[in-house]
Length: 79
Image (cartoon, rainbow, N blue to C red; front, side, top):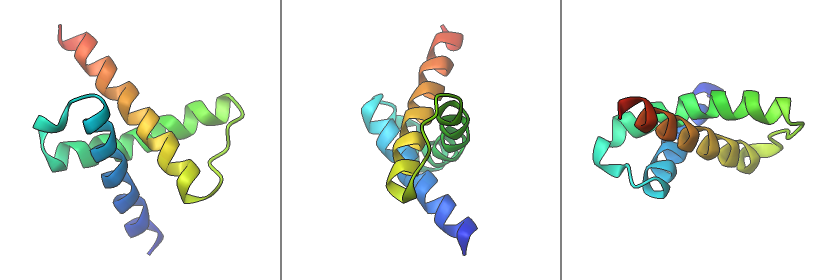
């Protein structure tokens, strides 16, 4: 059940990051993967900065930030 919740939060985070970064043209599946990977990246960076993901809302914020960072890095490497 925990995995399902993580996947749903990742999908939501990816969707939000896609809208923030104007990357919604990539599709739902790509945004979901970016959200899940963004959650991982955001969790690592948040942990290094001492920002713990307290609850699902904190995790969502870190996931969105991580996904935005991944989109930004992808765009820079692509150009």
